[in-house]
Length: 267
Ligand code: FPP
Image (cartoon, rainbow, N blue to C red; front, side):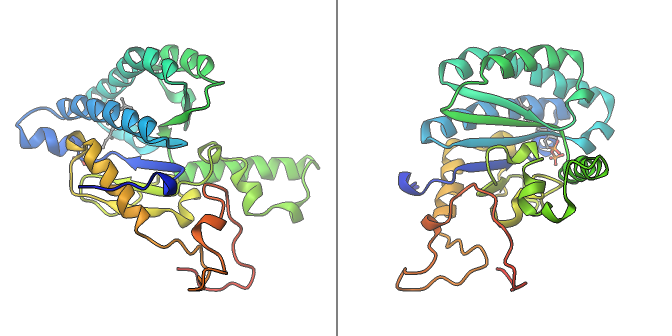
């Protein structure tokens, strides 16, 4: 049985939902069928995260690079997103979930925007959990955009270059509005970040599973969280065994951390 300790939950969990296409191919079905089954897994995991009491869940639903997929697949994904936003609206509001979206939202088609924007507005004051959908999102693109904004503020005399530090950059990244991810889960057997939450992932714990996203259950989710809870988070420091030094609970989870100034190697 999977044991999740309610006192040591990750605040912010990010998920790379991979394996929809392979799930469909294994069944001789079109890739779109995998994405449809993946939507059902999204519903399961959002409910489980809300029940557990996570502060934030960020789902990598569509990357900046996914626009290069065949147009039929892109259209199917946009249709599923809309379907999700329409069908889950009531439950999201009822359970006081704040829905936010990160990424190049201007690129999204009207069928998504017309269900996404009103739900973002209607749920803006909700405080029980933040559900962030990464849509047309890329971590490198987010870093580039924040850098561009900073450069313009320096050019306009609004910002002193000496004040630009880790936090200054983080504060301009929508993906970190809920704090850094404590745990990033990737399904589908690959071991990479694929441009997801790159800046915030600096100290995230990573959990990989071979389970294909449409097969991902609450139990798989709890197992990933339990594995997170068995780890010792050191944030580049040495933990004293008498617990008088830094302990994971004395580090504010989810808050951006500044790098060590001595350039020490961090593990
Ligand atoms: C990666 O699997 C998954 C995606 C590109 C899309 C994820 C979308 C969903 C789970 C459904 C819609 C989302 C919401 C929020 C309702 P892949 O297609 O790359 O799989 P493969 O590696 O097996 O080809």
